[in-house]
Amino acid sequence: QANELRRKETYSDALPLYRQLWSTMPDLCSQWDGWGLAFCLKKCAYYHEALDICRQVYKRYPDFKFNRDCYASVIFELEIKGKNPDDEKRFLKAAKAIVTLTRQDSPFSFFTATIFSVLGYLEKRNKYPAKEILEWTNLLQPELLSNEPFSFTDEKGRKRELASYFERYFTYRCKALFELCRYDEAIALCNHALGIISSFHYDNDI
Image: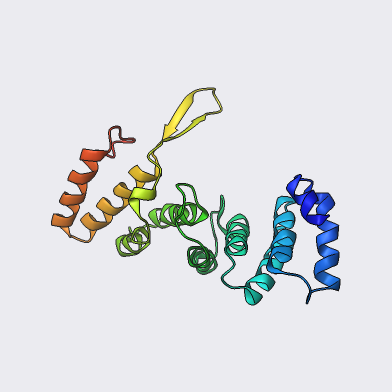
């Protein structure tokens, strides 16, 4: 019944059933039952409780992909999404947990979104952290990144466009290589980017 309610996307109705199963019959619950509970908790925005359940399932079934993905998505909601972190150590620890739990298996995976959140955070430092930026971009496979710019309408009703993950990847790496005085590698990467990206943003081509 809990599974059927979840499939119908009535998560708040499925939630008490999953909770009862997980609390009263933990030894009889499978990884799917734990994931179902965590998934419904996440959908109902009970992120801290979802995080706790994901941890419990992960301890019992560390290789279960559905739970790993759910675990990563909850960490992303709590520690990464839209954050301007005061605690750098905690922020980076959360980011490293996500990239350990997940893979870059889609253009907009939590893996990818997390790395670009970290890159955006590092970029704001007073001294450009070229070595760290290079280390984080090393984790990405550029061929799996989306080349579609991010489009939105601003508060004045104007249509705006932001650079794609693909373009931002090359921009970060080229600048990092330049700052590290690895000029030959920077030139080669710039030439490669200029040959495969048709439209640049914010003078990135320069």
